[in-house]
Image 1 (cartoon, rainbow, N blue to C red):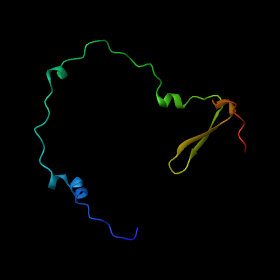
Image 2: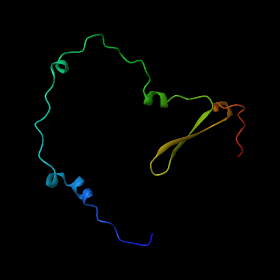
Image 3: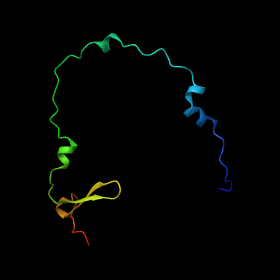
Image 4: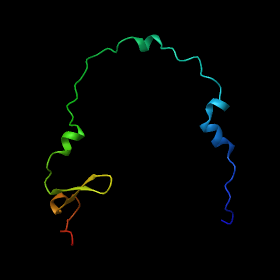
Length: 93
């Protein structure tokens, strides 16, 4: 790469200035008769566990080490009982 100038890209300008370069809004969408009717059948309540509820549980072999970095993301560690591979070894420290 021996040039230090930036190439002109007119399509990028058009992409971010749609009011200047694009047409006006279209007529809009109308709903079909099938969309306005209610859906037949029974409703089902989810029995799944939310991530917030799952995250508070203690898991065998895992340890919470608190939050790290500027983002404050949670971190943790695990021992050999938490590994699912063949012949897990104790991690070297």
